[in-house]
Amino acid sequence: MKLHILAPVSLVFFMSVLVGCASTGTVPGAAKDAVSTQEVTDALAQVRSSQSYVLQPGDLVDIRVYMEDNMNRILRISGTGTVTFPLVGNIKIAGFSLEQAEQKLAERLTAYLKQPQVSMLVKEYGNKTVYVLGQVSKPGAIQIPPEKQLTVLEAVTSVGGFTDIANTSKVRVLRVEDGKQQSMDVDVSQIMKQGNKSLDITLQPGDVIFVPQSLF
Image 1 (spheres, helix red, strand yellow):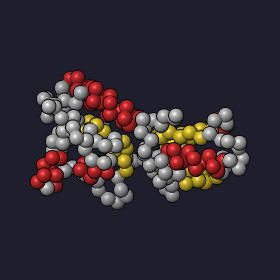
Image 2 (image 1 turned 30 degrees about the vertical axis):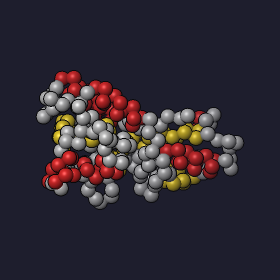
Image 3 (image 1 turned 180 degrees about the vertical axis):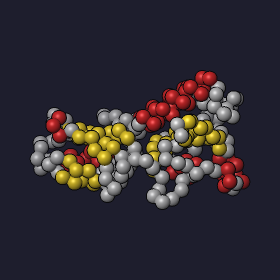
Image 4 (image 1 turned 90 degrees about the horizontal axis):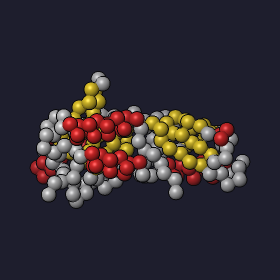
């Protein structure tokens, strides 16, 4: 079984910020409900083990063919969703999961190689990516729709919504602006119950949404 790593440098940075804040209590407004180190560790493990991410234009992918080292490439997916790979030329992989893209490329390579085994991993996400972690149904990376805005509630909904033990009143958005990390709490429970859309936050590329567990 192949493991597809979905943890770019920016995500690891945010996770280190979360861990540091959890241990020092320096996240603004988080004195009584700091995100625990274990929550962060579990969330990162979930993302790393996910194979459901759909490739997007702008993603940087590491493509390897077993026993064919001269064919290994690190390629940026073009605006049309394609990469140019040895022997097969242009092939569209955007819009497919990693596993689907691997299969598609392997099928194209069968005309030139005997039973090719292809593996891919995302080294860097395109600049429209946000990350939804913690107590949601399918933690992972998602794309901000072209020429549209994406809010916290919409992002959570797009990954299947909250789990039964999610703390929906303390959803945290982590963002880096001008080299400085920011932390914002969003009370999604009030947005859902009272329809108060003014509490929702419009996301920016690179944002991390972390949904903590409720404390019973």
